[in-house]
Each structure stands twice: as structure tokens, then as C-alpha cells.
Amino acid sequence: MTHIIIYTKATCPFCIKAKGLLTQKAQKFTEIDITGNDSLRTEMMTKANGRHTVPQIFINNEHIGGCDDLFACDASGDLDKKLAA
Image (cartoon, rainbow, N blue to C red; front, side, top):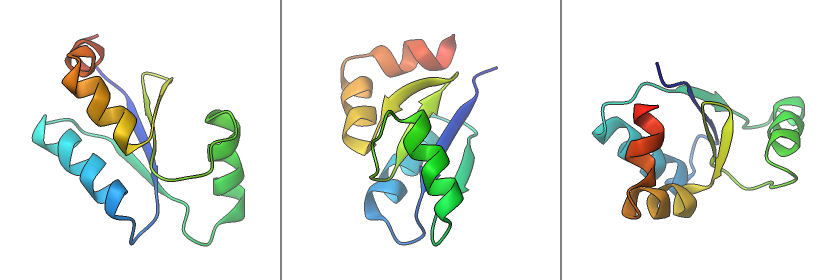
């Protein structure tokens, strides 16, 4: 089973877009909303090698990156491979 974690903020349009793609692919994911939570933001930045923007997406503990990275992964065909693993 694929394990997906996505760090988000409530009003982030890129977060909504990334979640939409994962939903379109019938993927369940754990959403961690970091809005106003410094400890969760620090956790995300640590896992994402210092990246501080949202969303930050992880599939099976592999850091995919943000929304643009997720869509690039999808365009290359790699996303479906990662989701099938």
C-alpha cells in the first residue's frame, strides 16, 4: 500500500491542486496542515531538507517536493510507478 503524506496550509492554491491530482489518481493521503503550527512547520522543513514552502509531498517516505515537482513527476510517468510500488 502506498503511503502518502502532504504538508499543507489551509488556503494554499498549490496544496489544493496537488491534493486534486492525488485524488484524481484515487490515492488516499495523510494531510498535515501546518497553518499556525511552528512545530509541524519545523518537522516539515527537516524532512524536506530545508524547503519551507507548501505543499511538501512524500510518497513511501521519498520526498517528491512541491506541487510543480508532483506534476512534473506525473508528466514523466514516474508518479504512476511510485504509486504502484
